Length: 558
Image (cartoon, rainbow, N blue to C red; front, top):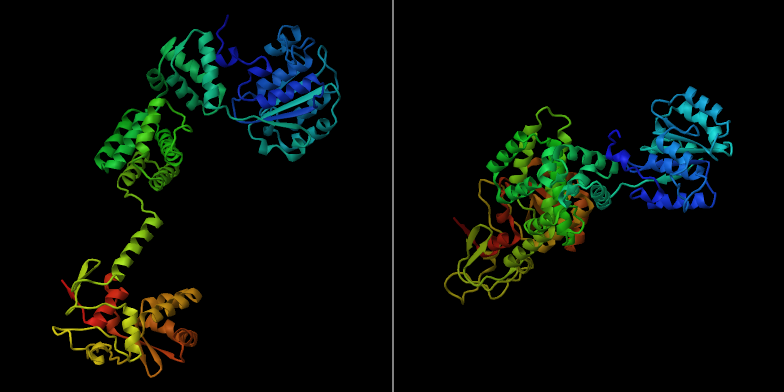
């Protein structure tokens, strides 16, 4: 006999043999058994999942004179003719090459004639979405009211291109992608009957390469047989198909963890020298990160399609990464894949992307950041037990020992003209500090002079927050300005430049009303520009440090 490829030699002959489409097979068998066949069916789904094969089995089952359990017996002459493609009652039409209105008109003429041998005259139109709009329109009337002896079966990989008027006249069956386990099981069945020795890792590589198509898997199986003979292992398959070694992906994650840019460039050179396709490598790397993410999220490797050896590797690798880091790595990989469409230097793009991954720092979540800020806030708010307070990267020395009160309490007491008790400066603990010692310090004579009473810090912060909730820009300007105090019913605000001053003047009425609500008295806003309001490092602008400097005369120590 002439050589037959595996896909044709092992083509299913009964409904149960169609792998992964039991929902379609069961429905069609029941329709045949009860003689409730529709006049038109449409089979949609990916390539190589059994659409045309199912159509042929349906044609045989509908015409077989002696069906066996609603399946064709494949022994009668009618079944043999359909299997060999020589039946005059079953016509297979390629929609891509017979897509015009003239071909459909000829079909309309031929449907009037009854079948010569069987019960039904079956028209199987493959890739029906390729028909023109005029051809579909010509088919409508015949499809809606065909003769009782006609059975249409349409197959398509792009059902969304089929007009709704056609779909509404057909029973639709959606064929699904075939899982890796089902492909491995079918290939194992074929290999056992053909007496071919092949290990499970090799079958796994073939099944993943097929991407849900059994026909593709069988074609790859034939290719591997031609390369390796009747004894096949995973190593031979990887050489025959030039599949990227999965070990390379684990090397990538090791390089990222060790921050080794030199090793990353060497890895890219190895990929190029081995002749791997860069897009295929990046696609596999994205799947590798996806497997890591599944392991981190589910704390399991059940959803990963790989060998048991690599599943253990994923369990170990997942412990070294956070899900946020893996998300960022997947984003970078996706960006590289997208950019390959527009670049003529794919190697350079891969090198840059891999270096970007290697130099990437670990992620920090918002919860962790907020927790650190809260801890810093608690440390700044805690009373000092010595005469040196540590805040940020700078030290501030306080003259004498202090029985601390919160800055807001100090400011409030000073504002009301009531000097807080138990505050001592200098060597003698018995001398109370006079009120003028805690007054607002006079600035340099060369700068704008402001002689005012300090404002409670909590009131000023409440004023800024209220303004920011209602007018974001005004709140931002107030944050970047400074409150000098209150004098003669006016709230003095020192701006760093004219831009801030202009914004506050434009909103003077609004700010005056808001200040009156916050401070509980009718006061108006006065804004000025002062050279003393130049930007300062963040740690010097902290309210606690400002209060220490204002109230206790603290000085920075270099």
